[in-house]
Image (cartoon, rainbow, N blue to C red):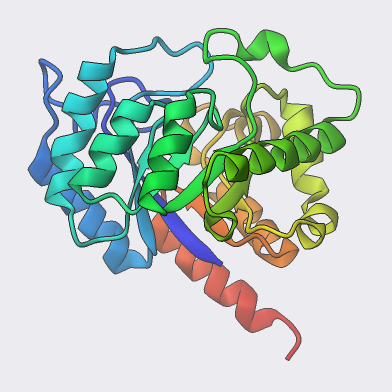
Length: 266
């Protein structure tokens, strides 16, 4: 399993907002580079740079503001395996031109220009299951069979991306833990990973780090206190055959995965 480190250039992400965004909305590029290099040294295989919080209820920002947050950081990290976390074609294009190696799209091609940008670049592309926007997703968390609907929609989104010119061998599927899903829905999707992942022809990414459903299980209200629960999900995902895990705590995740691997039957 490979580790994707989270680097949010936002004031309002649920766990680490404001860490590298100066007053006035300009990124602290030196601090962003320090954090990214620390993640790589700690065992991350790539770093995911995002300039817009996508937590439920988060306010949107304009395209120029997202560009102003993300592009200076991506440029400063050129040469590392940097992904851009965006759902806008204009931002995806600019980030790829600045040195990003992949696009992590939490709205899975809702902006068709993202698909065009990825197709032109021939880069890795993460399609995440979601519904609506951060402002509407809670109301759309209604399913007859959440697992069948999530994986069925991901299959359809993958086919749409390929039709738009995205290389199938560059696709990664993300079931979108916590996005347009209740805590019970997220747990159902995670429980079924051992069954679903082997039936999926594409690599799967799981992002559950520090999320609220873990707080509901453990009683940990502070996202920073949810590391043990996050590690439990990472180990479960590894055993299910998940290819990537997206996390805040890279070093601890690396160590937990190494020990879990060592304990498996030889």
